[in-house]
Structure formats: C-alpha cells, structure tokens
Image 1 (cartoon, rainbow, N blue to C red):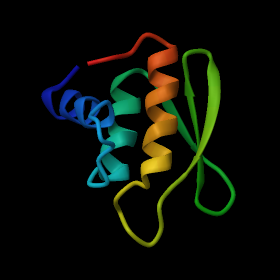
Image 2: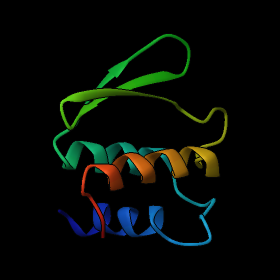
Image 3: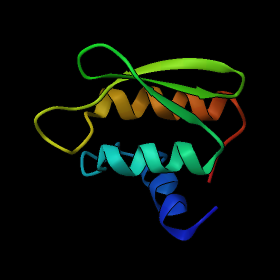
Image 4: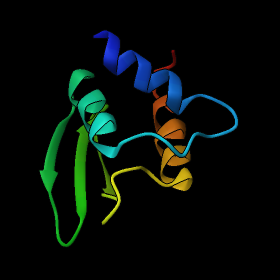
Length: 84
C-alpha cells in the first residue's frame, strides 16, 4: 500500500475518531486495496471490495468525512482483516 493510503488507514483506526479525513482519500484507499467504485443515485457510491458491495454517501458539500461514516468504514475493513 502506498504511504498516503496507509496514512489514511491509520487515521481511520485512530481513537478517538478523527473528523479530518477527506472522503477522496478514503476512496483512493479503497482503490489501492483493489476496490471498484460505482456511482449511485444522489451522493451515494458503491464500493465493490472483499467480494461484496458496500454503499456509502459522499459527504456533501464538505469534503471531510462524518465520524459515523468513518466508524462504518473501520468496522468493514476490520471485519475483512484490513488493519494498519
């Protein structure tokens, strides 16, 4: 994994949960892990990774990710053995 994506992974697993993670960085990390992103209705995107599709909302209009979304991403990564 590239250094930038590894830094994003570390921030996702940081406690307390950071509110300074750009959603674009999370998407880049998913791609680095082999994920495919598909656009959905409104601000939703589908991430195909770990042989499943997970749907997330892009945070609009801000670029930083809500803590609850980061918690969901962390739980999904952790349940599939991805940790820093």
